[in-house]
Image 1 (tube, helix red, strand yellow):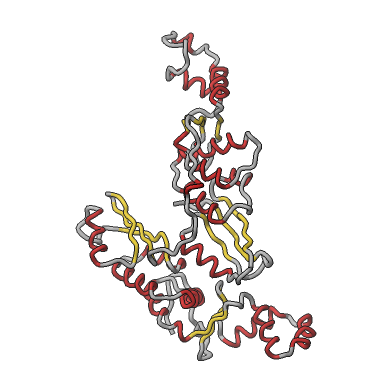
Image 2 (tube, one colour):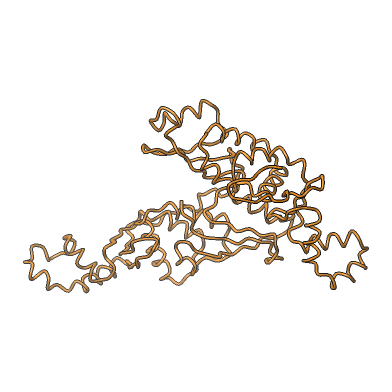
Length: 393
């Protein structure tokens, strides 16, 4: 499943706030929830988002904007990520046909187009009228030219033949790109109306970790935590005696920062135990845990499991998303409101906040400020944040 879009999310009244999130679409349920945990929207606060990058289907930039629903956009990206090369060319062709009408294209129509790629005929070797005319003539689809001698056949005006076919079929040519081989696209059936049947209401997943387990014989999805019986049944489904020759990748995780660690783990039972531990965490504790993992630079399951037991040793301030916000909060405690308002314009809030964080030994994360209750630094002296893990203090 390849990335289609990159999204920037923030608070609508503070689009440049330090409380923001970047999210690649298509995104799994926990990845979207994680982005909202970083935004820290309060009741009544509106969401701001924009598309910052197109990894694929850049032609969508002419029709997509922030008026469409976030979950609709994710549904479109999800379907596009599932298309093969020929279907991608078909989608680009359908989009080009729709753009001929000059009418606005709602996101629901784009979703319908993504689900309707099999309603098209795609000739990947036909990139212009001449090539289309020759292909159709050689395949016997042009009346009146059967059994022509080769030298007479080569005298045909293939460009004219192709142009007439394209006009009669209302087809389009799609240029080759990194996304697809391009070619001639013509619709032979009605566009499916799928968008109105999709239920995009956010739902709590019935798993804490979702895996795709695969081998040469195929692939299956596995929801964790799972019973021993369910785990034992996976190798049988893939015609293997045990888990030794099976591989997996993480499709979704309650802690998205650990998805790579889950994919790289080699003991399915350890992964299942970790999933059980995550299932016991409530929402508030989970956010503290994710902040702690980020602050400690933890990216391996062993240390991640050890850190899960240490969350009571930390205080967490989700309302703090920048040193300046911490400085303002500190001044409001030290001074009465009139005095604070007088002093604020003359204080370097960024530097003051950084000094406060350094003094407390805290760490500012994408979820908020995290500090140890005993006053010790979150990161011990000499402790390094690394992608492969760290030594717990």
